[in-house]
Image (cartoon, rainbow, N blue to C red; front, side):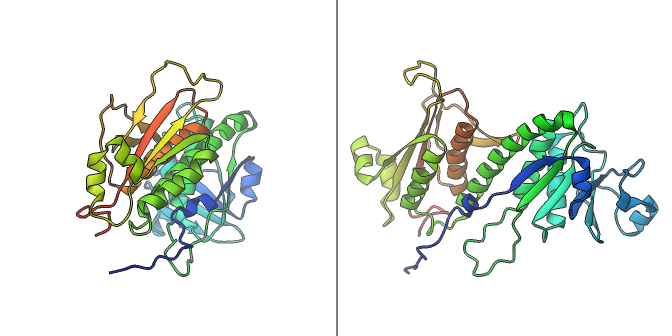
Length: 335
C-alpha cells in the first residue's frame, strides 16, 4: 500500500514555537491576567488578595485540600489558579510539577504569571526555581499536532516570573538554561512522535543538517554509497528490507577557544546510550562499543542533547553518531 505524504509536513513543529519568559516583580505578577497561587496541605493560607475571606474549610468544600497537583480556578477580573503543593515546594522537581499543573489548568491562556519569591529558600535557589518553572510551563503546553487538520491548542506565548531584585540575575540565568533544555526536550518529542513513514532516514538527515549549524555543530551525512565504502554491513543488512535509503549522521561539537587538536578525550555517543537525567540530556561513554538505535525518540534525544550542550557552550569536545534505517520487522519502521 502506498501512502501519499504531504510535502509540507513538518516533523519538528517545536522549532517554530517560542515562549518569552521574563523576570519581574511581585507587583507585576499581581497585575497579570492569569497567575498561580501555591498552597500547601497544612498551615496558614498564603497572603493573596484573592484568598481574602476564604478559609481552608471553604476550599475543602470545593474539593481542594492542597494535595500535590490539585488545582482550583478562582475566576474574576483576573484568573487565579490555586495549586496544591502537599508538604511544600522544597525541591526543583516539585516546583516543576506544580507549575506544569498550573499551566494545564489555565490551558486557554497564552500568558501566565507566578511569583517565585514565595518558593525561593535555602533549599531551592532562585536559579533552580526559575529553571524548574520554565521547564514545567513550556513542556506542559507541548503538543504534537502536525497531523491535525484544525487545532484548538493554545500555545504558551509568555511567562512572567516574579523574583526579588537581589535574585533577578540568578533567576534570569535559570530561565536561559530552562529554555534551552525545554526546547531540547520538545524537539526530541517531535522526532519521537513523527510517524516512521513521515520521518524517513533521509528526512532525519535533513533535520540534522538544518539544526546542526544553528547550534554550532559540524554535521556529516553518510548515504548508502558512503556506508558501503565504510563496510557497515550490519546497518545495510537491516536496511535491505526497505525501499528507503539508510543514513548515518555524524555530529561533532568543538568548544569555542579549544584547539581542535586537543588530545583531551572525546566521548562518543552511540546507540541507545543516551538518557535524560535530572532534567537535562546526558550521555554515557561507551568505550568504543557500537549499538544501533531504532527508536525515534532516542535518536531525537541524542541529536538534541548535543545541540543543548553546544548552546550552553560546554568546554569539552563531543562526538555523536546517529543511525537511521528502515527495515522489515521493527515496530517503528516501514512494513
